[in-house]
Image 1 (cartoon, one colour):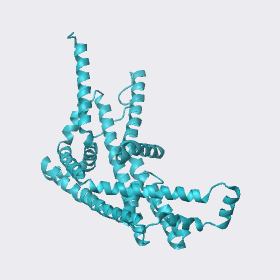
Image 2 (cartoon, helix red, strand yellow):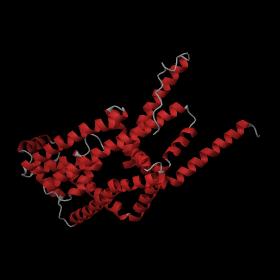
Image 3 (cartoon, rainbow, N blue to C red):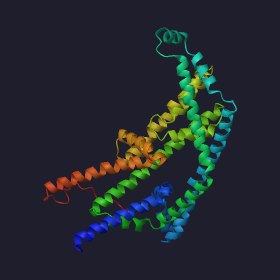
Image 4 (cartoon, rainbow, N blue to C red):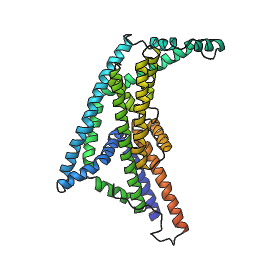
Amino acid sequence: MNSPALQRAVFLLLLTGVTLAFCWVISPFFGAVFWAMVLALMFMPLHRRLCVALRGRDTLAAIGTLVICLVIVVVPLILIIGAMVDEAGLLSQRVRGGGIDVRGYIQQVVDALPAWVHSLMERYGVISLQDVMDKLTALLVQGGQMLTTRALAFGQNTVLLVVNLGIMLYLLFFFLRDGRDLARTLRAAIPMKPAHTRYLLHKFATVVRATVKGTVVVALVQGMLGGIAFAVLGIGGAVLWGVAMAVLSLLPAVGAALIWAPVAIYLLATGSPVQGIGLAVWGAGVMGMVDNVLRPILVGKETKLPDYLVLLSTIGGISIFGVNGFVIGPAIAALFVAAWALFNVAEDEGEAPAATPASSPTPAPPPEA
């Protein structure tokens, strides 16, 4: 009953159970823990430079890095969220009060269609314009209500937001200060070859940095450009729609167009061709160029993932994990590719054990993440 095999099996069972229980306990704060880890990876190079400048004082360097993170990330984000919530509230009041007539807007677009389109559809009965208008009205109303409801709910959950923000900043301090020790402990605990463990952890850190840097930069630039265009055209809620375009731009290729394209169509159909064409050119040309040029450079180049794999993993990650998925999805995809590459290397080494280390295709151990 006390054989080593049984003892090891019981210990592994206990270890698995305790780990799962711990993950279940901290699951309500998954977002705070996850983003503390992401920000630690992003700001770790800055922390190391401050640590050198402060002659090895890790605590002071961590505090300085945390203050810089607050100034350039957290505070601007809070201000943008505040403005977004205010505009969402005003938009919701206008919709409820009848100030925004969605059905009337769609009716204007339908009336602007050429006569031959109306006659063709009525002759062959392919599509009922009334049915199309009803469906579009319901879709836009539901989408607008969902957008404003989510924005208002996000702003109203002040207590939960403050708690998560506090936990994130608290963990970020310790991740920055003790990051090297935590990385060493993690590498030692993973039952794999040290070179393989270092390679996979380095790959994960590289993908997270590249994805956040590339995707967030593209989202911010597209949201800012879209918000500026809406403000210039006099469209209400420019900040709200700019934030919406920034969030939707997490979806490569088509994201921000889901907002500006319908507005451009409406402007073209309602007697504002200059504004409509200008918005279409601005969206497809300037904003589209940002997505097509910056995203592959900032994301695909560093992660060494094909564009189609970045697209699929981003959409799949967002559908499963929500907003966090735009980082988790590509990270999982990169680890998948890296793990299979290591597997192929291990298989080759098994078939040819006489290969010298110089000729072995095993990836060289990267520097510490």
